[in-house]
Image 1: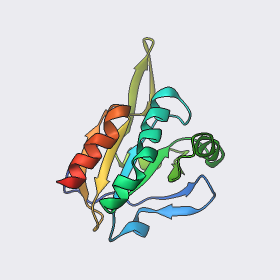
Image 2 (image 1 turned 30 degrees about the vertical axis):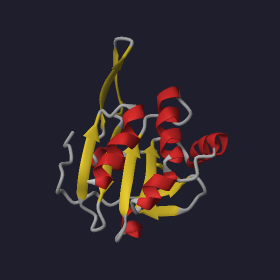
Image 3 (image 1 turned 90 degrees about the horizontal axis):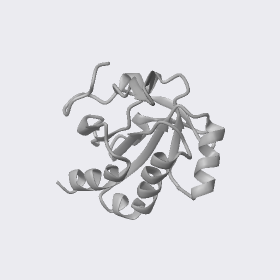
Image 4 (image 1 turned 90 degrees about the vertical axis):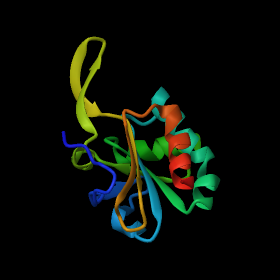
Length: 154
């Protein structure tokens, strides 16, 4: 798994959101983007992380940043998650985990002593030109927003 570093071009993506719309990273050139990867919609850690992002939409907007959540869930599962918690931002379906692999967040995990492949919770700030500005691999669900806001404020 190759990890991204600050200064790398952010890998382009083209994924379906929870409403069936195709979203590309290049749609956001000229704006900062908080891209965060989470393992599974509507699970405890992912709910904390996504709700924290939702509660910070105003602060992110003030800092000219747009949040995008990405997981291997289907668009339908993403929609249920969005509606259940009134998240209000794009949740993208990376069902074949190709984007997760491109961002270096698809890797080996261990739960209850068993190894498996999955999303390593991670967040990125992508600048207005599509360059990685900040990176956090293995980020805690509760730390995604504070780290992002601190980086955006400089």
